[in-house]
Image (cartoon, helix red, strand yellow):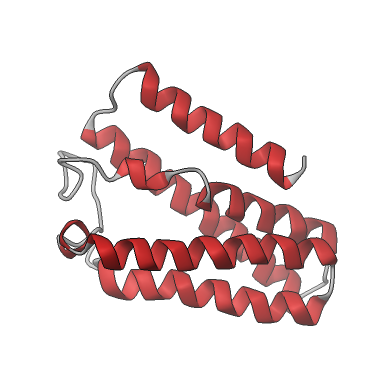
Length: 153
């Protein structure tokens, strides 16, 4: 499956669900957590390829998945009421996330840029370039986590 098809599929799913019925805040939290978990799993697959037996096809698929999720419009999953835990549905987002939207847009834009570049570089199959871009992409993840993610859950 190519990057564009995967991105379109995920975007269609997210958009379709969003417009089929308004999502409850707890559902928004669950879906965004699933998206981030899926990206983290794929980052782990790339790291394993970089540190172990390099398989350019597997690395490219993982990078395409990350880019697809990053371009899927996950910002829509930070609606009203998603700034706090709801029953058993926990969130690690800090209140500052909802108060500093310019910074959020800056960090999200940086991540999207690097995730798209990661997919492009991974598709090229060059290990050294992938290693460098993987680091850049990871730095953008960390920048947002450091600023807006609580570690106490």
